[in-house]
Image 1 (cartoon, rainbow, N blue to C red):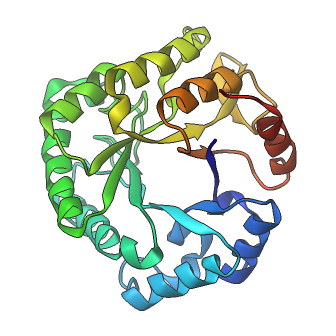
Image 2 (image 1 turned 180 degrees about the vertical axis):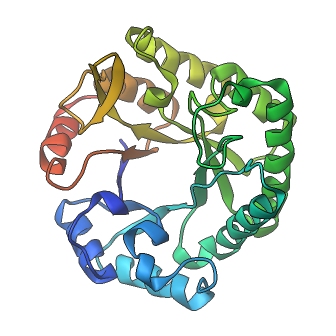
Length: 278
């Protein structure tokens, strides 16, 4: 019913691409969300990106029946320094241009922050910053359309894209089949409203489900007045209800197990495969 996916950098002790692909396949998984600079920083990033590199990774993973479902390029798209922002957007455009060589269907990112280090600022919630973000997304979507690659945007409470209203507004102002939403319901809750997470998920699919291209499934506990991420099955996320909603609206959707590292993966997958989501 789903395309279960792991993040490559959640798999530990994989010094080579072949070993990473082998470890993922060993869990009977066929998809990875791949961040090149996190899994293999020594191989390089922007300056070394080339079609041959993408083909190498695609073929190495494919030999183990693993697909690079999402290519990660998580960046501060609204960096306040114009020079830095230009570098970041150029980097992202290069990922969009090379994604097809990796065999990826989309390039994924969050939206960033007005603070250079991606920190929390209430300025992120202003209309001015949102307008700025819209301009940036328009630029990247035009590039994504040119290369026929999906731009996957993930919302979060600390970012300009912090609510369902903001997501819907972005989709209305940048109408494109190549702009997709990566829905992470845990990114959009607080310690005060986490009980409403299932309702929030249902509402998201009702309002802009046609644009949701991936689900991030991130478990959590409430500790010291904060939401703390834990491996799936160790927290309080109602993953069964969330997956039932997803199955109804987006069968065979990519479901990324974020924050579930390899040691916790067998138990998480056992829970997922034991469930019925029809």
